Picture 1 (tube, rainbow, N blue to C red):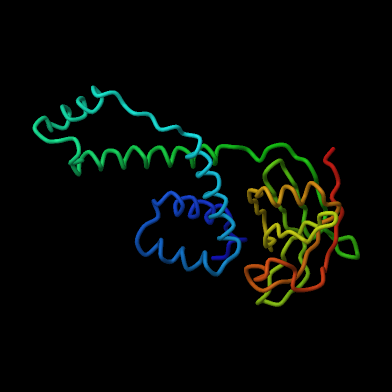
Picture 2 (cartoon, rainbow, N blue to C red):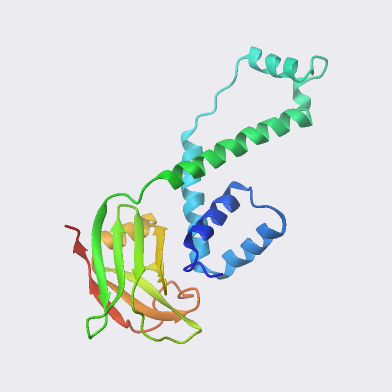
Length: 226
């Protein structure tokens, strides 16, 4: 499985990984995948950034004494000390945190792509459409068309070309169907000041350097959506 073929599955795994609900062999496999695949690393960083911001926004509140007393009474812990933190109480607390974390993930999943801001149509020299790139406020959706032949050990990668700055990767392009991904703050800023996008041929999974390793094979203007 490659990230560009199954972006939604990769995004779900990244969210579970960051939340800590991805366990055992599956977590270890995902960690190896993250270490070798820029697109997987990008999704992990997205969830780390967003979930961390949500956590920072929550202010700690000291519960009144009667709350702990009520918990002890329900768990039949009247004779035990609160500081012992019985395993059952900790399990309940962990379950609450898990439900809250999954609720956050579902909330982010429920958000639509946002407002369509810009569009880029990438075509061949003969006018055949290769990709349609839709830039939303916070999300990128790419529709694949008629792709030219490429080496089997290479991927097409999309880049924003900000004015006066270095190219910023927008991820590996799909070879079929539609792919979508959430844009990072850096990517949104690059697109905001870019007049064009470029496509290069890179190693599988994208450029290992964070910058294009080859000359662009396609250039397309970004135009405001009507």
